[in-house]
Each structure stands twice: as structure tokens, then as C-alpha cells.
Image (cartoon, rainbow, N blue to C red):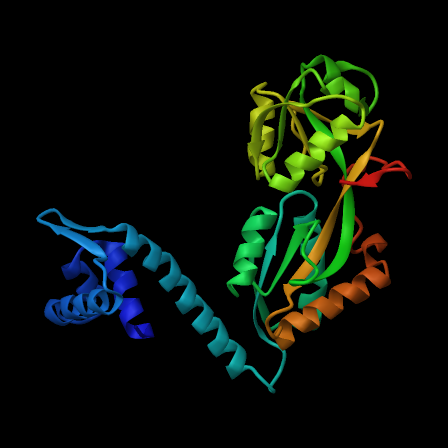
Length: 317
């Protein structure tokens, strides 16, 4: 199995038609069919189901398609990295980021870093912390901004910020209509709740309630903030989520959860088990300096969104 055969396979899998794939590859049909058969023989499994209507991927073919795309992407990234080595800081930096306030932190780092190193390009991928950690472990990302906790034995981490846990409430709900920008945890005990699906988060939220001898009524779990807000808009329930950067939405109200208050922590992580690139290392150093010099409070980078004040006695969740 080599890069060429994987390229052939990806093209055929994309078209599900040997003739069309051959035309895209600028080759004739027989040698392409032969390459696919050789790949199947090498792997000892059938990759396509062949019929008069065309081709269909087998389960094994579906797995190979995902891995082949990852392998070729990693190979291209490695080629760029080596070609730029010992010349000047350039190339592509692949960064993953969880939803919430983290993307807005990352955007400010990229802005400042780009001014110093204008030849660097970026690929930014969003996902849950677990999704991003999986991509990081497969070397599909150089760095990721995730929500704590993380395994310090496997990952090198830099704490980059924290944000309060809030309740996102349907605009006409009694809790939204009540005065003030806070809601007590006990007021959420009897309403259907939408929460992050990460196993650790579910356990932590259940423990949060149990501290008050309460049990949460969890009706839905989701990894994505946008999905959570959409569910709240339709009145499915009240969402418990780390505060996102403020985006005006006439259908929901956001209030700080108190008694007790909790906060989420964002961490910039890289794999300990692999050699970090010069580019990723330089970006990580930039973020360290950015935080130490508190540039976020400068006129250029200051967050302009509405902020909820986090109580001093708030704990990490």
C-alpha cells in the first residue's frame, strides 16, 4: 500500500465509478481497475461491491477511505514542514478548538502571530474536546484548545483562560423573565436540562447538583453550543454550558449559575509523545508571552462582548 494506490482508491471512492475516476486521474480504466484489485488483495478484503449500477463501498472500504485521507493529509503536511525547515517560519498550522469562548481567544492569537509571521497559513477545526484529542493523537492537528480536564501524562498543556458556567434559557421562560442576570442552581433542578455530552461533564454536573442534594433532569446531551442554543430556542429545555462570547439572540436569555458558581477552564495542548514542529512551538511560545503580558486587555485585543462577573469563590467544573 503506497501513496499512489491510496490516491487511486480515494478517487474511485469519491466517484463510485471506475470510468469517471480514470478520467480524473488521466489514465485508462484497465490499469486503474487492476490497482484497486491489487489493493484489495494486499489488504485481504473487498473494498467495493460491484454491480451494474456502479460501485458501493464495503464497511472495510469506508474505514480505509477515512484513514487514506488522513494519511495523505499527514504526508502533505510533513512535506511542507520539511521543505520549509531551516529557511524561514512558514507553512500550515493546524489548530483545533472547542466551542464557547475559546475560538475568540484563538482568533486574537492568530491575528497577533500573523503580524509577526505573515507567511504562515492556518487550518482551524472545531469539535468537542474528545474529537480534538483524537485528531491530535493521530497527528491531524498540531495544537488544540480544549476544555479541562486532560491527561498531563499524554499532553503538554498551557492554561489559557476560564469562563463561567451559565444557563441558556428560552426567552419566555419564568427564569428568563425574573429580574437579574443570575440563576441559583436549585432553580434548575425541576426543569429539563440540556448539557454537554462528554462523560466527565455529565458526571461533574450530576455531582454539582448532588452537593445541594438535588438531581438534574437531563433531557438531552450535545457536544456543540450551536445545537444547544437551537434546542433552547425551541423550548426543549434550559441549557447548562460554559459562557460563549456574546452573540445577540432574541430567543434566549443567558444567566450566570450561582450558589454554587462554577467555571470551565481552557487549555492549549500538544502531544507529549511526538516531536512538535518549529512552527507549532513558536505559536505556543507566542501564546505564553501573550498571556504573561496580558495583551487581551490591550485596545487591540480586548474582548468587547458582555461579560458575566465570576464570583471569587467559584470552583472548576
